[in-house]
Amino acid sequence: MNSAHDRKAAIKKLKSLIYSTKQDLDVFRKNLDKAFYSPVLPNDVECNEHNYGNVRCDVLMPPVYSTERIMIYIHGGSFVGGSKSAYRSFCATLANATSCRVVVPEFRLAPAFPYPNGIEDLQIVFRSVFTEEQIALSLDAGANKKSEQPEIIIAADGSGASLAMALLINLRERYRECISHVILISPWLNLSSDSPLIKEKKVHDEIMTGDCLRRCADLYTNEPNLSNPLVSSLLAAKEILKGFPPVYIQMGEKEILLEDAKQLQRNLHDAGCICDLDVWPEMMFMFQMADEYIEEAHLAVEKIGRLITYEEEKIDDATLTRAPVLESGLDREA
Image (tube, rainbow, N blue to C red; front, side, top):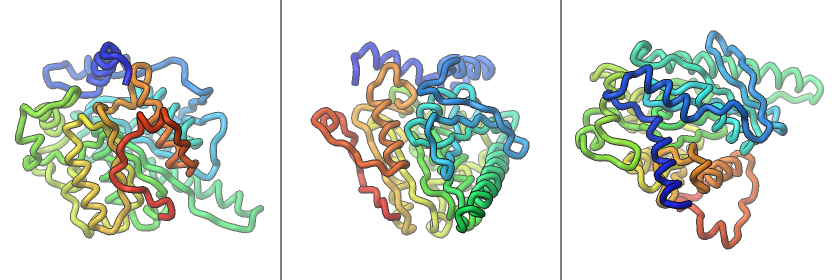
């Protein structure tokens, strides 16, 4: 971690991701975009717009990438904010680290478009990505005498993780089989009235508060829906989770959301699925998006890159002093 001044600056920036009902909604959205938008993308990553179905998306392409692998990134923003332009720079860094194209959908946001509108948009994007990638592989297979399914990665952060889990729960088996990894960063997993974070309104960390979580949930959907696994995936039964792709959760040690992530890991293990929980000491909610202030942000994204590309992790003295605590070993054969 860098200086106390850098940490303070990082916290100020990351708070832009969390909507407080004391704010005007339009002001929140503009401030979020302003905090994270960059006119120049890192690592010579190219950005093109593409419509998957009727949903506008960014497609970020690093200089070198696998044509057989593609990521769909579902952005956070408290269900009511965030955009592909705000996440463009971060997802460009992720594209470079993972050596794959990253699709960032501009799905509809609450409160104008509450649950399940965003999920429906993401289903359209997923099916369209799957179809286009499968066609491309089939054309290539004509020369190689083989046919394969596309490799799709689902990644999400914050409130976007709720949407990602809903997307996965709804997918048919033939679609789930093509998902090689699910990456959740600081996920929102339980918005129900039984959640300790919702009950204890005064609970907070450096970025998040239980009260903000509750109020954003109320804007996302009506109270009866909050216990639906498509909204609160932590409440999904074992039968629903069976057959889930390998899940990797990355988050900071200081987050109030950490206990929910630990419970999701247990739930997935009980369902016979692979789930890694990667906890970074002293880190806060979505520290990965404050890379100008926090060195660990770069290391965390690099680790996601190694996970996807199966590169051997290089260990040296410096790495050992900064290495995150991995709470369960990842089975790379899964």
